Length: 258
Image 1 (cartoon, one colour):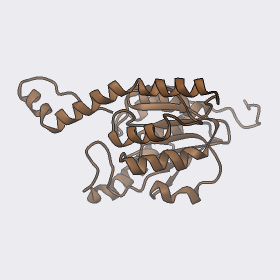
Image 2 (cartoon, one colour):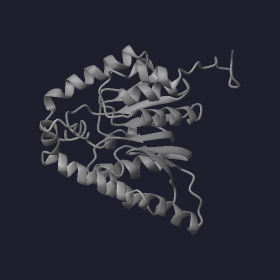
Image 3 (tube, helix red, strand yellow):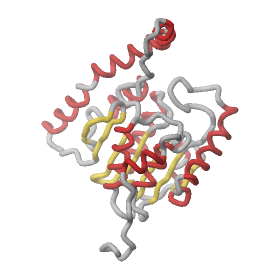
Image 4 (cartoon, one colour):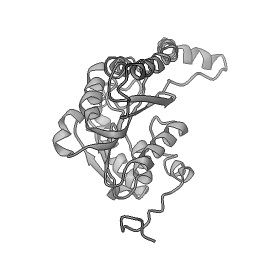
C-alpha cells in the first residue's frame, strides 16, 4: 500500500524489536532513552534530516535509522578518533579508534540499516559544509566538555527547523554539557524544554515568545539542578573508589550516571 506521498508504506519495526536489535551493541543508552530516540525519529517530518553527533559503535544510530521514515536522511557524525568515547574515556584511546569505526560499520550492517545512514567521519564543527538544509531531529552526544558541547548546541541547534526536536545526552549529569545548556538554552528564545529520560533532555523548537513562557521554560530546567548535583556527587565518589569499596563489602556498586 502507498502512503499519501505515493511512496510504499513504511513497515516500521516496533520499539521492542529495535531494542532486541541493539541489545548487544556497546554504548550508553537506557531503554527509556532508546524510546525517546525512537519517538523523535518517528515524528521527524518526511523528507527531513536526522543528525546525530557522537555515534560510538552505533547503538543510538541504529535506533534512529530503524525508526525514521525512509524518506528521512539519517546522518551520523563521529570522527572515531579515540577521544570522547564515553564516560571516563576522554583521551588516550587512539588505538581503539579504527576498531570503533569497524565495529560501527559492522553493527549497522548487521542491523540492516547501513544503507540508511550516512556516516561523516569528522568532528562536528567540520561537518556543516557536508550537510545541507534544516534538521527535523538533532541528537547531541559528542564531546561532553563545555566548549565543544556549547558549540554543537549553538551551531547545529540553529539548523533545527521550527517544531523540530533537539535531544542532548548527559544533560544535568556532565558538568560541561550542563553548563552549556544553562548558558545557551536556559534563557533562550527557540527551544522549549519538554522533559528528560534520565540524562537525555528533550527540547522542541516551538518556544512561545511571551516573557512568561520563557520564565516557565527556565524554571523547568532549573528544577533539574538537584538531580545534577546528585549526579556530580556520585561521580566524585565513584572516582574516589566508592565502587571498589562497595564491591569488597559484597554490595552492588552504583553505575556511572548517564
